[in-house]
Length: 131
Image 1 (tube, rainbow, N blue to C red):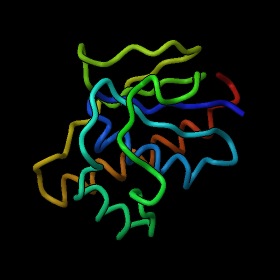
Image 2 (cartoon, rainbow, N blue to C red):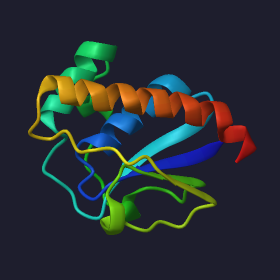
Image 3 (cartoon, one colour):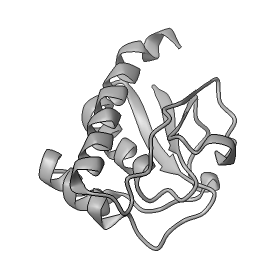
């Protein structure tokens, strides 16, 4: 089974959402991890609240902010949209999802990003065997 790392600098919001939704929608196809080059004391509380409301997933139960070196070697790296500041992690395939960070924005902005991540996770699940 392939291992997928969802990466952004702080590993507190978008990458955590992607890890949670990867585990929720694609655990039969790939293992999901998230990490960053810096960490925050916890996962973004707006992300935690909205993912729990939308999917019934408690991200704080099984996830925490992690550094790149805390995850196993991966096959696929998905960066969240950190442009030139995205951390590097060796892999066989890399893709940037170009997502805006919703931190500090409205629930509407968060939900828009969460639904985009859901769609992209499902698209990745459907194409993973060709990678």
